[in-house]
Length: 223
Image 1 (cartoon, helix red, strand yellow):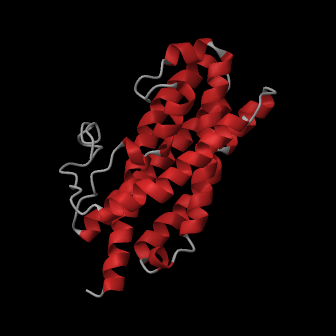
Image 2 (cartoon, rainbow, N blue to C red):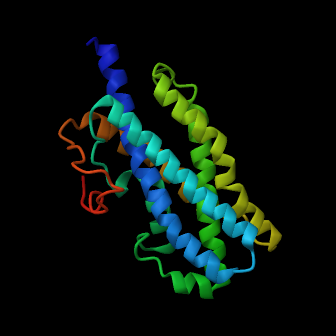
């Protein structure tokens, strides 16, 4: 394999490993969001349906990346929450991990529910912009299966942030605070300039032994 081909293969391997982590993290975490939304605004059926679609899309994306790895004949690299945008964002804004989020407290406090909507909205807007960049990446475009995955993700992305923005606007809420925008920016820069390059260069990173939808413990330990 030529150096260029080896670089491209490693790039796609790392990229898909990070995405499959984030897609799995996304759809499983949205179970908590659905629980909060159903309790906080049970009569807003359109908003709840939009969150349900968001979760279904995230699960679909996870399955597409899983299928890509299956066709490649290998498992994803074992990444952890250090490569998760939503993990860092929740930690910054709420001061805890996703697992530690107090759903009842979010339901009981309007400001906390608004904050959760903003975090999801900003995370998904960041994701949409990143997909636009990746669709122009020559390594992604060189792999027809990977390109097709990101084309599907691009179509789905608007439905992943617009419902939260719409809910905030309908309730006369702030749609973004400067501290949250700043946190989003620095989390993204950290992932792009530090976390992913480190993963790319660290050849000792092991691969998953089980798929996360079959074994929920695979992402609970540090890579």
